[in-house]
Length: 73
Image (cartoon, rainbow, N blue to C red):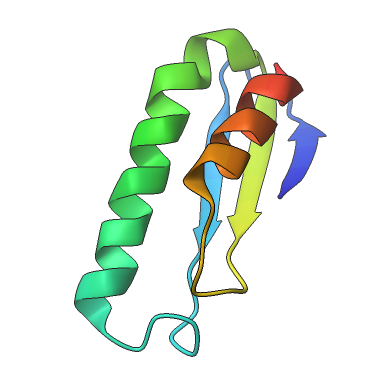
């Protein structure tokens, strides 16, 4: 997970969910939906940040991702 301040007045999200981690498109799309929902719940507190989430393991601890997003605000 990477954070950077942006020049806009709202947060932006970038997701990288590689095919080698989730070979089936259905699984990749589900993971993106879940991550976007986590971001949506926290975006009011994030200010003007760019957040890039790159998955590299099949076992994704969503609680860890949620904690990182909340900690960045």
